[in-house]
Length: 455
View 1 (cartoon, rainbow, N blue to C red):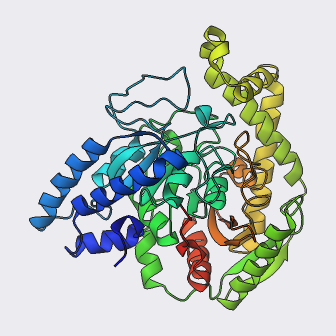
View 2: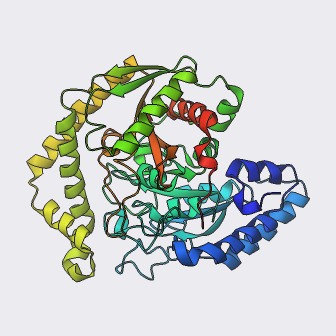
């Protein structure tokens, strides 16, 4: 019999709902796994084992009484250390925020708890979710980066130290670490998940989202955390989120009828040959599960949009950190400090023009997605790079952060050296369902995510 820590979120949730697994046994198994592998992986900024055990006992008592709080009842979660957690330090991977203990949960964390999730602890993030690396290591090769900025969330999931996690993406910070760590990460549509209580990096580009081991797992998490929030105006015009996991269960026709687009340029520039071959193989698998795969032409303004993304990020990062940076410049890492300095030099008209370019690119990409239902690309330029000084390039992920369209990484194979590679799927605004459906069809046909790192 498999150890409880090795169960996927969906498997564990089903067993708990059926009374065949206790939240206490799941948490104890998870704690044992953390004790064994965390000293090598260093995914956690802080673990709250006693709090998790106490909550597991409470939920086990409810389970015995026939009450299941929600679909995540008793499931261990890691929370990226930029999400506020009531009574638990939220340091954002920085010296500046060290010791800050928020009085209330972020909306996403509160919704996780309301669905029955158990917060095991806070996972490492790069400094303020930007480019200065965290201590986390890649479970598949400890001398390689797990990616960033959701470094600890990706590493903890891959190392089987939790069943679900929260991440965030401003450029490539959910999709890239998911690809590098061989897990599934979904960056939802901008406005699908509330940013309230999440420390901002660049407020018009920040996307909180779910990370897990399977497509159905991220669908369950998205159901729990998505929806309007009066504290975040960006969410108020979003349509009501559907029941993602139930839809996947009820519509098991694979990718039949889905039109998948292959971009005519940009997304294979600089991609490692081995990763590109795995990507091309993944496209053939999509065809075998019923998808119609065809080439698409990106908008002519696409590349200008990627330059505009950098302008917007730099300017907004500088604005977020301006006061603290002036007071404590030496407490910032070198990469974030350079970004702030660059942002401070950007004139207001340049920032406004970048936002105008963004509108044009969004309009053009919407037109492309009237011709196809989803876009398939490599999730990164290759497997996780060796070394811990960099978290890798977000260049293939930022187009969908820039436009706010949903994107996801699902494992699509391994290199000869045993490192995972991801397939990125993106879709129309607020149509996460189609992205999830395509990813689930691919996942079912391959099963790459079932491998466990050799820890």
